[in-house]
Every structure is written in C-alpha cells, then in structure tokens.
Image (cartoon, rainbow, N blue to C red):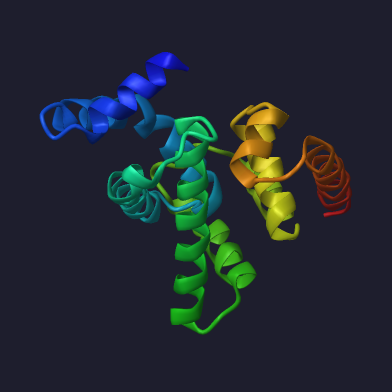
Length: 180
C-alpha cells in the first residue's frame, strides 16, 4: 500500500507525472481494455472508452482519496464510462441498451478481434438478457476472474450481494444456453 501512495504522489507531482502516467497506462491498459471490452463488446468502441477512462483518471486523480485501491477506483471509472457509452450510443440510435448489445453480438462474427465460436456468441446473448448488475458481476467474475472482494470494492456493494447476483446470473445463463 505504501508503494501505491508513493506512486500516486509521482502521478500528482508535475516533475514525475509524465513518467508515472506512462507506467500507469502500461500497467493497466490491458486489464482495463479487457474489462471494457467485456461490457461494450466492440473493439473500436472499447478503444474510445479506454481513452476516455485514462483521461478521467488523469483529470480526477487529485480527488482520489485512497479509500480503495487505485486499481478498484480505475475499474469503477472504466465501468461507468463503458455503461455511459452504451447508454448514449443506444439513445443516439433510438433503441434500448439491450437492443444495442444484441446488434453488437450479431456483428461479433465479423469482428476481426473476436476469436470466439458459436458457443461464445450464445453465451454473450445469454448475458445480455441479465439485469445490468448481474451482467457486470458475471463478466467480472467469469471472464476477468476477479475476486468477490475486488468486485465489491469496484461496484461499491457487499460480497454477499455479489455472490447472490453471480449465482442468479449463472442459473439464468444455464437456462438460456440449454433451452436455445
């Protein structure tokens, strides 16, 4: 934790800021990309959201109180940016977020950055049917293999509630996958 506080000081210090921010990007670009990609599904959209995430991190770092890990704080920003992006994109197209996600899933087969098969597409379709919180919990636990404690910190909820959400999500996905 001491190392993290020192690193944050480097990020805030104008003399060490550029080097520290390059390290921050190099350390967190890949996990944040994966996290955002799990939410928005499209590579180009993910790049846009990732860029916005790092801009917000840089912009609001001075407000970071250190009550959570830097990792959790950045994931929370990435999650909010991804959900806001989806909501705005759906609104622009005049459709619901669920319809937007279904269209995106239908386009996954032609996405050169998607290497899944029919089962992966079926899984994605099942996930879209879940309520937003269950989607997030499932994706963070199943795809990103985050611990319940990390997810709780990112989403600002209890571990017990997350375990229940994950359990319900898994049951709904099993039903969807076996019946379709």
